[in-house]
Image (cartoon, rainbow, N blue to C red; front, side, top):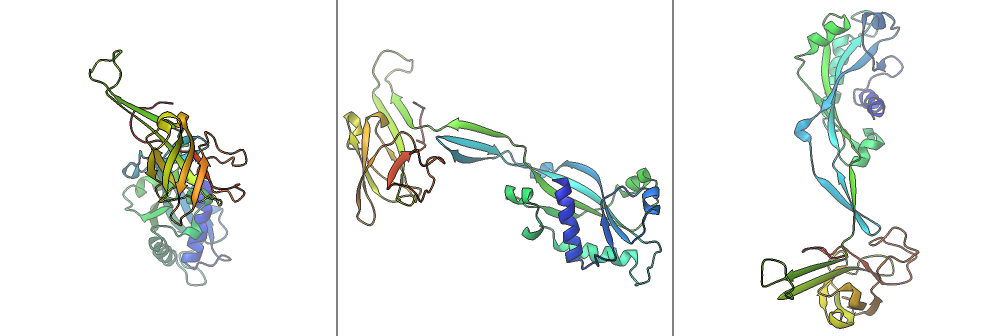
Length: 303
């Protein structure tokens, strides 16, 4: 990621500061005296001297996603600060084209301050995939003297620039989908042989049409044996319906859609073989409307 950030930063500076690519190099090196003495062209240098987490932007939130008959939870990326010392080196303080070091730094300063949040065109693919982007900030140079001293250099015109990039830690947990929940109420607080005073079983399905799109706001009634017959509910905007019935006793779902269609869908316990991506996936090759397992919210778990 660091190499990709450096290449993107080079492109950003060349473009935003309108610097001549054929007359000025952009490098990422430790500017020691021996390195500087070997330069043959005017050079703008970004020396990354510090790398640490930006604790103020830390997030411990997880994002949820569906995978097959399970749910994945992924920890949000951390935010890392890459701190650069920005310097310009010419063989003379003023070159033949009249561009001194301060003039170059002034143009670079304006370019970096305009891009306090990097535009999408400058983002490396890995940063774009996280959805967090990259932040850039010109910072005070309180520690610059120590950096120059450690390099064996005297203090010279410079900027201090911090780039904040996302770091995906790859922390992901996977849990099986809860297909049914069972909530029972008993007369005594301690478990015993007495039957429950009240019991609620909830099972859930997702309804999809021929194109794999959710069937929303449809009236759904279960058909089956025992308590699996007669339960009613409406599907939500994601096509998910929660019925007060045990899924083992539900054989079919009778669905009345908003456009007046009456459907009778088998209550599948698993996705069709031709739908490898699992429930909730839009598939253009679907045979027809179908009901797939969905997560059943609320209450203790019964699988």
